[in-house]
Image 1 (cartoon, helix red, strand yellow):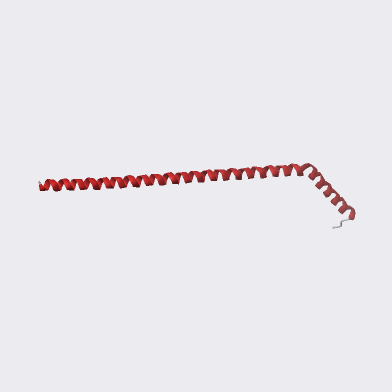
Image 2: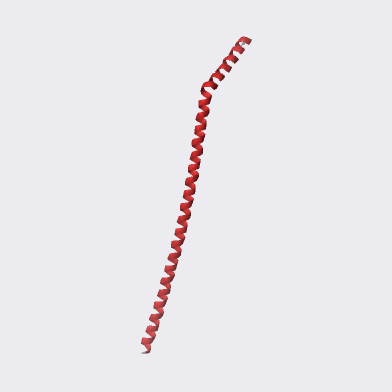
Length: 101
């Protein structure tokens, strides 16, 4: 493998010329493409965060409504129990009065 100084300089010059041509023709479009992609990714992350906040709000609203419904159900059950006890007392009193009469 015999390399001469002229071959090395020619190869180096060709490489430098190639880098310069690529920088002038391909580098800016490539950077523009990467910047656009970065922007789309950032926008996607913002949309994801916005959707996440919306889901968290819906979850909080759902939990609040569920708690309210459960509290109302407990109240109605307690009212039914109290009404049942009242009716039972009335029946006992009526039965006692009828038994005494």
